[in-house]
Length: 498
Image (cartoon, rainbow, N blue to C red; front, side, top):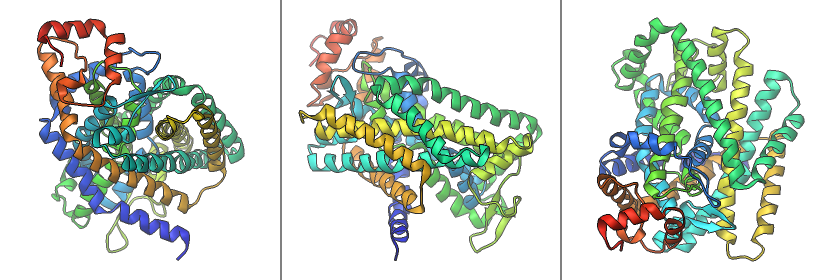
């Protein structure tokens, strides 16, 4: 057995149905315990999103949202949706929506916990699973394992795969040499990452809304042109999702499995990646960032993934494989699932536009994902070496290595690289979901405290002792320095803050 086959089998085991059920189960578990804040507090998600306050140590809520969304929105939002339709039919899209709705609960917990136990390292806030596993679970070996897995999965495997997809799509659309693309992409990445979290946040703040808005707008233009088909499109999605359409009965089980699997893979809720962006934010209360990151899951799946689905289904630009071989529907003979479905959908709207538009979309989707991965890698390097006097030098070396790996990623890739990326991300999901389930109590305590203060008419400020949370000493400094008025208002209402 060669290495590519071996890694493929390992990836298949990690991303088995068990992980799908764990992602789904965690979403249900947290949503029920918190009484579905993704519905009750939707208004708060929006208001907290546009809090532009930052500090010398942290980025704004919107910038951390943009970084996390840049990590969530990637080539999976194009190729992943097409794959879900190919194996599960149109009904798979409904189940992607379900996992996004439920996954928002898990996204809240991990992001709030990242804020609770964030640390200031070299003048910047850092947080995420490694930090809350050590502080919350008192398990340093577990935390070190997660940190190492993140560095390998996001920094040196995932980023290279994203870089290859930029180079490959650019070559196919415009005939540009991968070497030229590699130089350009590496330079952009290096410019942002060497500027620190602040610069990455700034780049994400402008690039992510632009790319997502342009992509969604094109989808809605195509939908508007096919406006008469809208009722039929949604009827097709819902009937297929609940096995009410005999034509897709053979893939009913696949609709659920592929919808949940691709949805979980795309929105990353509960996998710990978005939590690392959340830990960089300057906020007065962890719940604020938890709500913001829950909303980012909605944007990833309910908007961007749905935009891809609308383009593909409304134009009939898809094939659906029969589980026993052959096709249930073959509208595109010889075309395999992937970005080709989206390209054909756009070409049916404006012939010749599909390939260049998708190439541009892949460029923005992938490069913002790489920037997010760069932040995640830095945060975990910071965790591992925060007490090492040579940390500044180590951080620079890691950034140089990231730039080099991205350049080489544009000129070479293989199925092995994809398999290693899947293994890495899947491992993160297993480790983090177990951790946040074990940390249910402090996670839910942050939401309860936030809602209690809102009922008092206050702008919530976080006092760890009020939530029964220990080892979060940084918050004493944060609240006294950055939020004295909110701290005074809370003290006036409740007296003793302990």
